Length: 142
Image 1 (cartoon, rainbow, N blue to C red):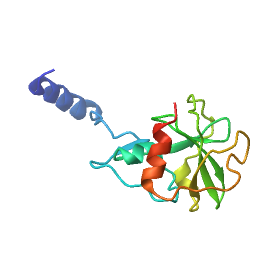
Image 2: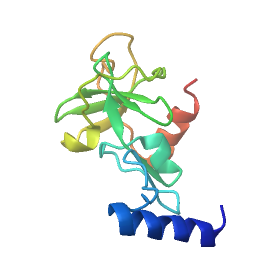
Image 3: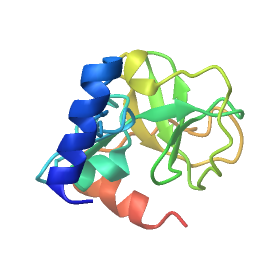
Image 4: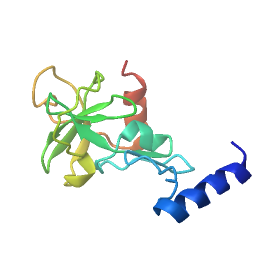
């Protein structure tokens, strides 16, 4: 629709009904930066995979009690205040109906790889030492 017609319709609606056209809003779940970011050893509540690409994507609690990226399906199992274990398998978007985001609860957990198949998913305790290790680990997750 051309701007003249859109503006005319908007003026008519505003003068008669006091409505306004809604502007598109940035997604609540995805905030895009412009440059890739390096990862810290501490989990900040956002998807590490997306963070490496310059995006801040919230991780949301799924029905398996893992935080899952809404964009990539990457999952993290949390031991509060201790570890954030990046699981070696992706989620399928089966989120809880009660919304809980990782960035609301992060407590400086250290990012760790999954090295066993059952909770706590990391035993003996192992943590990533740098951003490159985390990126290489994530790139090998299917």
